Image 1 (cartoon, rainbow, N blue to C red):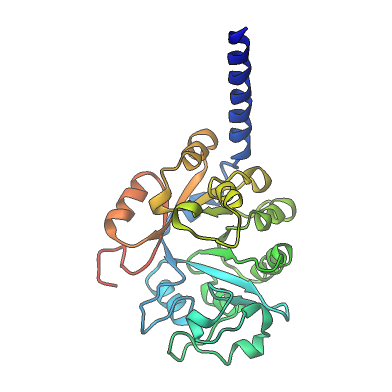
Image 2: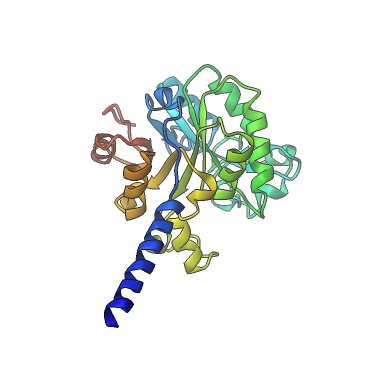
Length: 281
């Protein structure tokens, strides 16, 4: 009888592995990759601290002038406008502990970035700069459960400008909205090994494990996975690439050696703090 128990255990393990593979589901072959693969992307703009802050108009102008694409972060404010900034709190970037979600566009403009004269830009200001220029990687920063509203507002704004772009988010629910309402947009699942880096502490360990291994991909069905460079060899990333032929994007690349290694594997790079052309940034 012992062999029946072994057979049952093996069957259960096989079923669980099949479910694991199905949970990683991705989409392959979006036609926009022909263009998006041509570029390297400057993380939060081509910033050069302390003179040029991240996610500033100066950083985005510098990206355009140097013919780089750019990655940027978008938050939904209380008046429905969209702010381009990484953190919800302005404490790190503007020295004031206020949440950007609690501000209006008018209130946002009173703050300055990282001790400079640079204001926090609105998304439409950045999009106007990138019209008919280099492409964008737009990261949706959902807060307080506003993932649907944020996704809808962002694509409505993007529709107004002649900008090439893709959209990514750590929150698979933003991507799920895109899958349902705007399936033609290239969408990507951002992730990392959260437990390894002790990130996203507000989530349970189980939730961080699930998100770090992209086990909610079946909800979003992303066109790409944007994974932390140092974590890129995890099993889930490898299976997404091998099984679903998904495009991989690596963040954040900080030197030529990392860039060379990532691009050798066919990955796109989101870089900062160096010039990918070999010049001093």
